[in-house]
Length: 290
View 1 (tube, rainbow, N blue to C red):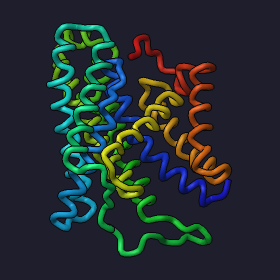
View 2: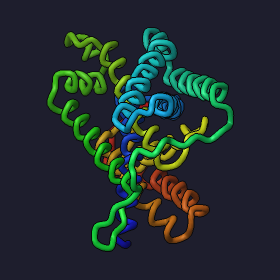
View 3: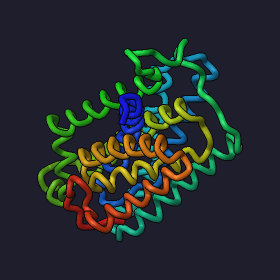
């Protein structure tokens, strides 16, 4: 594998890591896959795009707007679509159905607003690449890698060393016990959805900058799901490992067999993981899945 492919794979894997981590955060706490995550990613990306295009904003305010809008959507989604199910302690299947319904609804709103058109972010850099030795690096790839790494390291620090992080871990183990210990479970769950939504907005802008914007951009969330499966559903560190591996593997396959066959091989590898090691690389011990 050449250094060029390795660098491209790391940049792609870092964005997948953001998607997989946001996806796994909710799974870790509530033990269900939030399929509205992709739609939140799309909404955050379009919020950032419209405000950036209208006001001539640079990269940083665009990212902040996308993250804030994603966090707000995450909170609203939790309150509207999942809180009542939580209160009634209903079966995980209701979370599954509600998340798909919410995702379809959000995508419908985006389609009504933007139509079936494709949009391109304004250029944030005067030149698109720089060169180190014989390796040509895209500035957007370098930016995605650095900012994704900062966001994930910050999140890891908060989860491991702060009171909120300890509360989140406690809720993810057992909500009833966490409540008996005086933890505000509802607040922690809503905070989890907000952080997940913020990561969705951030990854949506990255995907929009690197590719293009369209109403079904959220379908790329399946890459985050695959990364979570490879790394181990419910494990945040496993999600990051799986995402980086997926990004590098995908870049290598595109170089080797072309972009047409690469997704086929990627899905086959995910099926092999599900058959041989369903708990993924990190081996997370998750009992309930939806």
